[in-house]
Image (tube, helix red, strand yellow):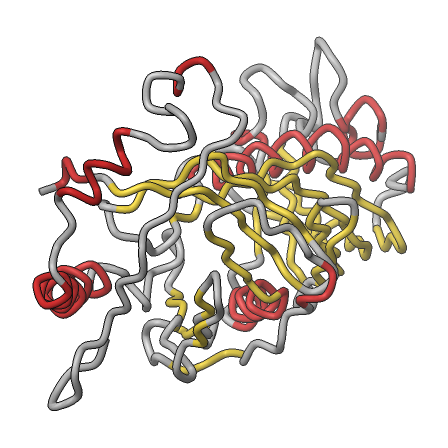
Length: 344
């Protein structure tokens, strides 16, 4: 079908529909290798001219309207970034499917400056063709998002006793019940009685992103500063600096149009401790990492994963039976789809 002075040519060969292995629900329409559906199609068949006009009307009006509803520059969750998904070049039409190619740039919203350009996803490692539509997201797109977060100082988290579970005295320098840092390090309770310990954590560089066994693995290089804070005067004293790393393994999945993640492992590693307090050693730091960092940071990240990232699709498109495969250089979302006519 062409627009303009060119003619609209649609071949009209003889119709031939065959049915094999009909299940019971289809017995009513499968009769002697033909069907009522086939007869109705033959009887109500449109002329070539009418069919051409209807198709032209649909693709030039409704089709364009549907495409206009696809947001190719969506905001990414609640952070000030935008994904530029505009097409790089014309789509490629194959015999049974259509390929479209998009930029996949991450832009810093206040300046609309591009952070990182994506590379090519490796198509050779994913051969499934059982779904109606596949969305390929290069690993570089994910990496560029984290680069933007790191560049703009957003990989910082402060843990205070107030953020721990209610009643958890872990970061108190004094306690009468349970376990707290004051009991593990007597010098802390002696020098700073009835005070709090605050942990200020920074990412030193853009985390590295890898995919393994269908998990997204984020590797952070971190530094943590430890302060003692008076609960009334709010004065803080720096007592330690900790260098280390954190590996976070995330299971990703789709629910309708939302891309979700859930942490399956949060693994901190300690490399070096500098402290002015005797007894503030590896054993003490491991307690902090397990009882404070993991129990505080992990729920925050899981909440973001539950919120999910929506795919930029119009309301008229529904996704079903979605799968997520993590291959060497890409996230591959496969899904069946349907048209939601109730939107209009």
